[in-house]
Image 1 (spheres, helix red, strand yellow):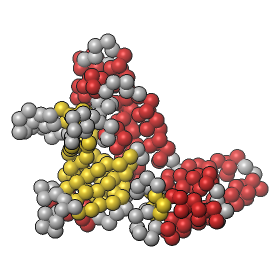
Image 2 (spheres, one colour):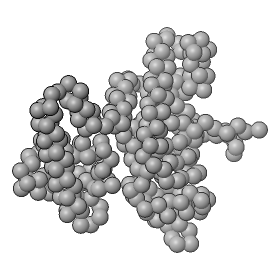
Image 3 (tube, helix red, strand yellow):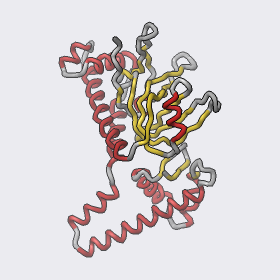
Image 4 (tube, one colour):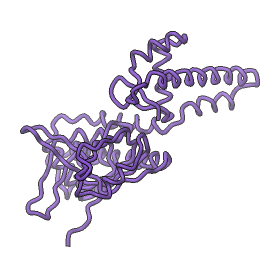
Amino acid sequence: MISREVAWRIFAGEFNASTLEIKGEGDRSPSYVVTPLGAMVNRMFVVGVLTDSENIGTEDEPLWRGRISDPSGIFYISAGQYQPEAAMAISRIDPPAFVAVVGKARTYSPDEGTLYVSIRPESIRVVDEAIRDYWVLDTCRQTLKRIDALADALDMESPSVEEMAHLGHDPNLSEGVINSVGHYMGLNLDTYREMVIDALKYLLPEYEMEMEIPREVSGPEEIELDEEVEDEELNQEDIVLGIIDRLDSSGKGAPWDEIVDEAGKEGIDRTELEELTNSLLDKGLIYEPVLGKMKRI
């Protein structure tokens, strides 16, 4: 009996950095993408924003492709005639939308030493922002476990599953970590620690925190002043949103350089604009469909 593979929680930044595949022997043996942190991914569960989708097949034989954004990068998905339910679901979702996907890790290797990874969805459905936030938090926890396991393995002279288990690490993760140590040389764990920190920041309603702190420590006059500042910032955010709407005539996003020019005409310099767009990104009101363009959600 073949057991069902665990659906890994993993950020796009870690998944897309994978360059190691372990192929199963035989028709029914599973294959795995081994990530730099040692996740041996056959199935995975991801939640993010479906930013765009396209049928690159035909009406009779559709092949839907899409991109899902998380705090660390982009997942690429595709579903065709052999995944009819997933393909139908993608065709019915109007991006941008929060979606949850369970699917298989897939690889494409056009040249020796080159590996591209993607997801073949088994199921995909629309979810709300709260589900996305919970997934981000859970994925941060799982990523930190992998970082800790890999750090322990790097401290060992000859790491083994038995030694890793002795330290309390899961045997499946330990096996992946040992594969990772043997393949990914010079791995910088701080890169992944920073990825987790950035993802956690993504969940923080900074604008609300900034609003709450003065209310706890300030007198009435200061509160009034802070509220004026907040109102000004919110007004500037509305101005930036309006600019993005006006410049997004193609529906594919507003060019950043043109946003800078238009914001300048409204008295918002580049530094202020970057702070405002970062705030809007954190609030989930805009996203970057491609490098150099901003679009409303």
